[in-house]
Length: 190
Image: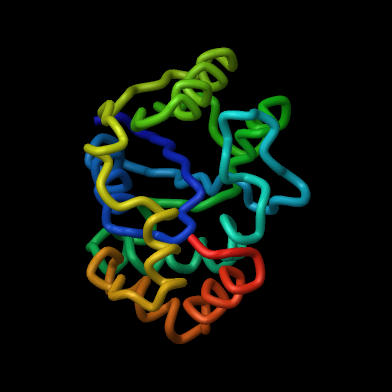
């Protein structure tokens, strides 16, 4: 077991495949740092053509703070002690500042499911970070994604079974499901 691990993702909306990723990384380290990419799409927009979801409000309906709270609550609900994880911004689209946010001496855990994931792997390696790939999966093997989940929410379909209980409650309590529907109505359907 390593001392410190780091994972990253947009978590737009936190779902059970995200939890699989979070918990697989946590099992490998004492302290897990959870990096939220595109913490602000205005300040840190996508800079790679492979990063297809890092620029629009429709793809990024939750704020950094909302994602922070959802991840925190879900990890606690899944039994991870609060002193064993931290959550912070992870501006992968600005590699020149990334190490101002994250520990350089950690193991960076990743899953590779797309060409964008491959590019992120290369970005992390170019910063001389220790990167460990948890798994490689094709799109079909990936299962639920944030894009699919937001589409289900926007269409009024049943979606709650794909997210941690605390995340479903958070979305409902804060009207985020309604926000996603409104964004879909405003910017086009999924």
